[in-house]
Every structure is written in C-alpha cells, then in structure tokens.
Amino acid sequence: MTYPNSSQVTAGQPTAASDYNNLRGDALFLGNNLVDSLPLGTYLRRHVENFTIQIYSTTRLRVPYSVNAPATIMINGYMLQAAADVTLAAGLISGGAATWYIFAQRNAGSTTFTLSVNTSAVEPTDQRLVGECYFDGSSITTVTCYFTPSTQLNTADFDSGWFAVAAGQTYAKAHGLGQMPRLTVVLWSSNANGASPNVPVSVVISATPAQGTYSPLYISNTNCTIVTGTGTSGACTLASMNYQSSAGYYRILAWK
Amino acid sequence: MTFILYNPDGTIKTFMTYIADVPLAAGETYTETEESFEEVAAKFALSHFGEGCVTVRAHTGDPDIVIDVCATGLQSVSVDVNGDPHIVPLINDHGSITIPTNAPGTFALAPTDKRTFAAAGSGYLVVLVTENPD
Image (cartoon, rainbow over all chains, first blue to last red; front, side, top):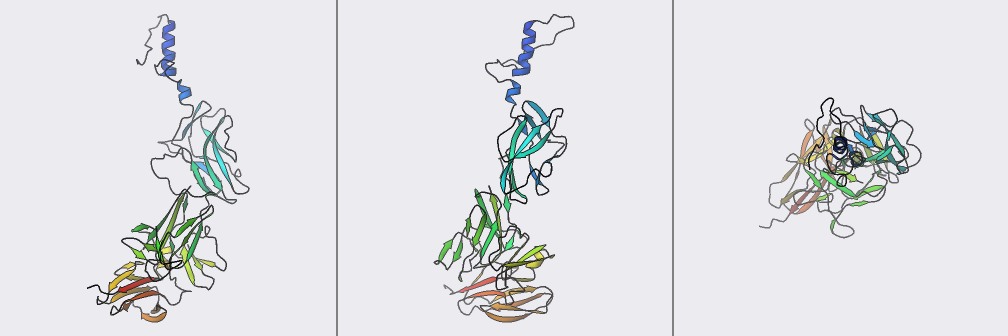
C-alpha cells in the first residue's frame, strides 16, 4: 500500500479528478482501496478510551476527568471528549432496587458529553451504553464500566473490610451485588490492620457435622456467609500449610 | 469508627469497620465506638513471641509456653483457660500466662469477661501440646 496517495499541488495548477480521489482515499481509507478498508468514520464509530465510571455521592455517578487521559468517546458519529468531570444529575436514580444502565449522551452544540441512566439497556439515538450500576433502593452499591481494561483484575465489587472472627460462629455479609458473585475470596490475617500474611481461606477444620476440613463459605444472591469450625483442632478459622488458627481476622472480596 | 456486634447473650461476637452490610441474626445487637479497629483489637490481645491468632504447637517436654497478655489501661485482667479464670497482673498493659507442656492437652485462651472483651480476632488463642514423638 502506498500512503499517502495524494501529493502537494502548486498554486495555479489544475486539480485533476485523480488528485481529488487520491485525497479522498487518503482521508477516508488511509490510502487503502475502498474494497479493503472501512471508511475511517465507520471504523471509529464505536471508539472509546480512558473511560471509567465511579460512584458519586451515594446515588450519582461520575466519569472522572484527567488532563492527560480525558474520557473520549464517539457517539453517533460525533467525536467527543470530556473537558472536566462528567457527573450524572441528581435524582435520576431512585425507586426500588434495580440494575440501572449508564449512557454517555451527545448534546447538539457540545464537543463533550453528559451522562444519563435507564433501567433499559437499549441505546437511544445520540447515546452510547457505557456501563451499569446496581441501586439497592437507597444507594448505588456497585458500578461496572464496560470499557475498564480487563488486563488486570478490577477492584472488588464488594469488600467487607477486616472483621474479627472466632471458632463456632456464623458471619453473614450482604454483598449488595444484586446477583450471585462470580468470584468470592476470603482472606485471613493475624493482624487487625490486615498486614501480611494474608492467607486465602479455603478450609477450616470442624468437629461438626463430622471431623474434617470444610470450606467455610457459602454465597447467595444477597449474602456471603461464613461458618467457622468447631472443636479443639486449633484450625477452626484457618487450616493451611503454614498457619492454623481459631481466631484472627477475615476479609471478604467479591466480584460480579 | 468501629462497630461491635454482640451475640444474643451479650458476649461480643465480632467487631468491624462497617455495619451496613451485616444482616443481624435474631437477638444480635451492636454498638459503635469512635475507637479505631486496631484500638478495639488491642483492648485484649494474646500473642506468642509477638504473633497473635496463630495456633501455638508444642510437644511434651518442650519449654513451657509463655503467652503474652495485653489489655489496655488495666492493672490486671482475667484470662479464661479452658473455662477456668486466671488473674494476670499487668505492667504497662502487658502480662503473661504460662501453659505447661508436661502433658498433652488443648488450651483455649480467651478473656473471661466476654461482654467487655472480644474472644475473637487477637483475643482468642489455642495452644496444642502433643505427645513428643521421640
């Protein structure tokens, strides 16, 4: 491929049809033959970069602004870029518990965008579906941006924080995800501040229902529940190769 | 801010920095304190060679096990060892209790007053003394 196909013309030089077509081909197809390449505008029609969404003030959402990496999105063929934080207007998310879909919205006369939400995921004209959040009836508990890079594990959608544990107890935590978590991790620490070691808790030793090792965790659409072991094993809250404990601190992390 | 969750019998079940995500079971109650999570954890803490929570293992004939007892702001504190209270004098918040290793046994250490101190987190420790295989 030769690129660019167009070349400089001099003042007074007649412009031939080939000059125009080469210029058009460079602009639309980056010098490619039109049967081999989409037009640039079509290619970039779903373009988006540097787009993240945060929970803001309990019931609102925000696309944070970065001067070095501003949120950039093409909506209905319009190239738009944030020039400041983009914040969802107050009062738009309310009512009962539900999943709300988040849209970036183009507005005539503006080169940036605004946010809107709907309980329907269907994209209206001049709007792009960019994420979803779960509203539990009083606050937004989780938010997912569809464009967050997946090359690293996202921050957990639910984090219980550290809490003290002991043998023979049941600890339930409402994860607020609005669905069954796809991944749940329970960590143990011997330190109240969660300092290392952090040991993934896969089993505890219990005397009931029978002497043996058990996973302490079960999950539902609403709760992560942990049942610690009983008995005199010294491993009722943690049974690992390097550490056994019947107390300590747990932290539950869950992803939707 | 730290939240202290109580069992129906008034003993402390756990403590944590969030309470909104806890579905309380019947009879469970909670209070909140301005103290930090670490400060609540340090109110009564048991450790062995500086390490808390981890089960201590020894064989018969090994040196006796010395467990450090820490209770903030007290002259003494009662430690429950397998259901028996033992008064531990404290100097600068610290004292110790010795677990004998002359015979096999399991020793569960916790605060005697489980309504004031948590028998969880750093406040509970198990010592296992097993027969010396040699």
